[in-house]
Length: 171
Image (cartoon, rainbow, N blue to C red; front, side):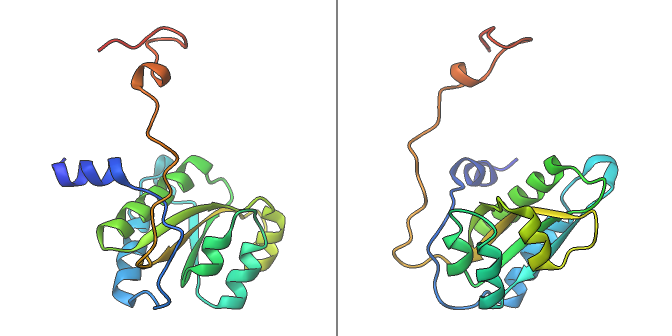
């Protein structure tokens, strides 16, 4: 892994403020291509993405969760659909690929939880058995946008254990 890639992973932050300009089609296609190439359990690829650009539809989608202003403010929201027999873990992997790909081409992103997934299912008109619990807001960062920073990270010794929980990890 290149140092640049590693540094991008370590410094990826949610961006909640966006320019008014739409995302260039080529940039959006590159982000979607990165999503498509995300690994999945047994390579089932039991997911779909709904690209939401219509402001009224973004507002309806935002109403499906709490703390969803980034969806309202971004020019694009990607609704991540878990299809029947899909895994939430795979959807999370796809969200991270989307966010890293976006950052690599200068597009800001913010992961969003849709707390009322039954409402999201209706808004997106999903087929039976599909669910949408997560979305990613996308947009070019506003000039005054600052990444969300909630402090640093806990030290490894507080979150990593060896062989069983509570046994300190010592490299």
